[in-house]
Length: 624
Image (cartoon, rainbow, N blue to C red; front, side, top):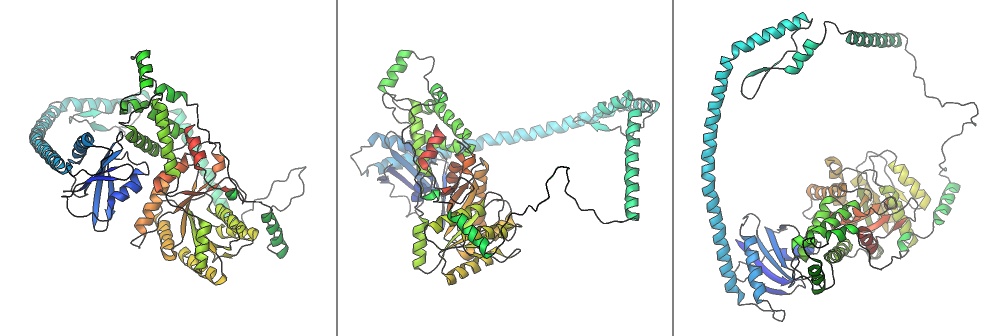
């Protein structure tokens, strides 16, 4: 049964809703659709599933882009209604004929909708009955085919019995030839084909007949192998008879080499060493997070030749008709007009390291938003598509909610509790290094920071974090290796509360998204400590793997959590951004998949190389 059908404008004004369709919906699925799908440029999807308390809905929608209308149908997911798409198209057609921008009430549409609904249900019922009628003779045909196959197999067996004498004679001839050539018939294999007849392996019989009685090369190889084996066996016996200590590897000494020196440049952890490290950290300068990045706001006037070629009019049209169309404007854009420009845009996004799946969904969403719109005068399809894509990219990369860490730190400080940030991610992306960069940025804003070494799995992780803590002159909480990271984080937060630290930065072990034991430990850490911010640290170098990493991280955190409302990833820290040139597509892929904003961008190896994501710069790079 259809739960609800709603018609509203793209500005959010509800024009009509069906009053006779059941009770109120649970959990406001239409608001969820607008917030999570339509505003996030996922309108190219076929449907959207929304889970509400006590209900599971499926939502389908369509647009009338020329009038700016949205038509949404809601029904129970378990029903699988077949007539919803047909009903939405009929409602769109009928409602567009009576639509008036000055009118806000359409009570007279109730009777029209009732008739359209009955017509759509009748069509779906007829289609279902026709499928059942068509399915019956197909099953009979299958039975007949099975009978024929049986007859064929019997015929094959008969042929096999008739030709059996001849085959036996052939086998005897082959055996005689093999014996004459000095080969046994152990490698001779009889293979049965699909018809049931026995066939001699042609490859093996040819090799057996072509080779001579003795192959000298093979004998030499066998002798050489045997000699090697005997030598190794003798050496093993000697080593067992006279056991000696293993000789340690020594450095090679050249004639003109300087005196060997110790290759350990780490400073001792004494008082003078700490002072030197403090001076080094103080001389780093201002963090790039607090610097404004100037990007020219001039729009790109030059477009790529691919888009221009793809948007050229058909060769069959004359120059006069194409010129008249560009001056007067096209009546309505259809999918065929948009395809060339969209294909060029998709290829361009993929060359910028955007995941193929994301690029395809974005182009589909842009096509859905432009289809049916009237092309303005003196404008080309390519420029219209590029402007729509630019708006979509800005809307995706702009955070849906404001996350101001400094403001939230002061709010938590007023409540006498530390602000906890957990850094998660796969192996080798730079979690510890960028944690130190965030700590340096917080120190510049007079915030007391404490590190928590919860990577108890990787060798050297605690020492690495300890070195950063000494250089930055901030406390570190550590319990060594092979400890439960969730318990270590909990004790670190308690220690920070006693010492009056404002922020606790929790370093975790790198883990692949498919490693269930480590993902379960991470879910336990987040559930037990309830951090204020969960930052996913990802590389800017990844392409399609960014989609897999983030989606599976979120899915694992949701599945393995024991809480009814599991914590997911709140923000993204993008590392190694200085190594990708214009391949900035990983930022778009990560934000599109998770919906979480890019809060920090790592662009170097020093403590100051941390900056904010400039949305205009990213969009400009993606589309140029």
